Amino acid sequence: MPKSQLFTLVKQKNIASVMRVLHLEQKASRARIAAVTGVARSTVTNIIEKLERLQFVEYTDEQSDPGSVGRPGTLLRLNPKAFYALGIEINVFASRVMLVGLDGVVEQKQHVDIDAHASPDRTLSVLAGLAEQVLDRSEVERGKIIGLGVSFMGFIDRAEGIVLRSTSLAEWNRVNVAEVFARRLTFPVYVENNGNAMTLGEARFGIGQGRENLLGVIVDQGIGGGIVINKRLYTGSHAAAGEFGHMSVAQAGPICHCGNRGCLRTLACESAIEANAIRIMKTGVKSLLRAKGDPDHFRITIRDVIEAAEQGDKFSSDIISEAARYLGMGLLNLVNALSPQMVVFNKGSLPTYKPFWEQVTRIINDGCWAGEQRVPELAISALGEDAVCVGAASVVMDRILAGPEA
Image (cartoon, rainbow, N blue to C red):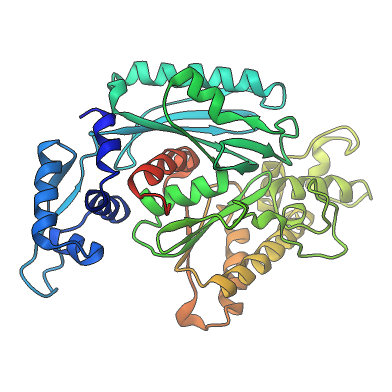
């Protein structure tokens, strides 16, 4: 079934409604689809038969909840081999390209070490070439590729596919990412912030699957995130929702790249811990980190600080603990404001460091105003290093299959 048929189908209201349910819920019975969409059961049956003939949907071996009213129905799902989406993650020093099926399974992937600071044009050209290599290796028909999702660590114009600015990659100022990729690859291109992409990937295909409302949090060289409400990615009026790293949490804190003072990213991310360690080391404090050399001439990494803390270095433990305290308080405010079912973190150095994780968890559990019965589940990404790229592909699926509300 070529993608042109798909694009025609999603323009038909009832068919689009059926597809939307199957995409958002992954598996559903005909009765469930009829109940959610309000479309007559007989009409749903006719639509399913049509989509089955086109090999767009398939029946599974599972049945709906036997405890529900009526006879359990066999669950349907979108055929994961019917169509695919490309996902590209643009990062500072290494980027990725993946080909993803409708079930979130990665068919092919490849990464490249490239400094995105150097030249946006060169970076985009290299990644477009990498995408072509991934497609060639996969042997998937080009007619089954419904689009390309690009994830970028910065503020973007979703409607136009333009990177407006980035605190991490200042050279990327009003770069029309969508235009470059569309010209080279001839697929529809959708651009999204990396925090939103990670969150959407986990909501659709990762540990957040099935949850109505969740927060996604990325803690690495910066802090980002995303918000899913009623299974939909929430981006706000100006596509800037989820920029947790730029919440001001310390009025007298450090100046952030964005120009504000005391942003969460200046106090609780990897680069903040590294900078804090070097700054305090210059005061002559005793620490295992001195083995790295003269603090005026060496770079302390987050792994150095974590390893020193694991060896009992109090200085390193205290720096990590302070970062965890700021992150915990920032997320507590978000949890109390949004009441998500789950908060999912990226699988990074800090979230997976047990003392850091335990402190953040304790602050949220102790401070959740709704009490222990309403404390959200805190989890680490199930998709791991693939989360952002799978999320970028999920953006394509959402825009096409979930309709204009996505």
